[in-house]
Length: 193
Image (cartoon, rainbow, N blue to C red; front, side, top):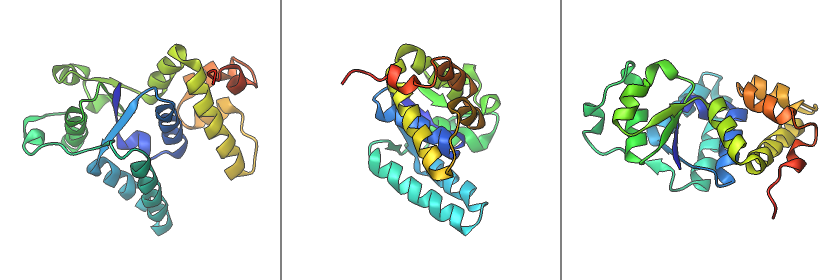
């Protein structure tokens, strides 16, 4: 399954790391465009020069890890598309150009399902999307979350409860599902090697 990741799900670190960790587990193939990545960089610039430098480094890492993820919409595609917010049309164009199945975004109102359906696409918020993947393949999703959880603990110098971490990252239903498994969620759900 190909998934177009909107800027709003790439910019928050924990959300991005969980999504891309699940992609690395082979549950979906991410796609984006230069414009989506540019929006991420510009959003981080609002935090100051260091924010943009960090974002640009992270963008370089994700583009190196997924070299086939970047798509370029053909000339004229943006002109024929319409969304309630014209500034989001480029995301729809990237999804079409990349033959995506779904756009993952927190921006539901600007991606009406009927318009997306006309292009053979659907929309999902990241929490529902990840929860659906977890329900179908708990091991890989739990493993991806465990890696992000461990890194958050390492970087922050504190021990995060996985449910609290995911809730803060706007992934509360996924956090609830994982915490229901108990503190060893990552060990109980790792896929056999």
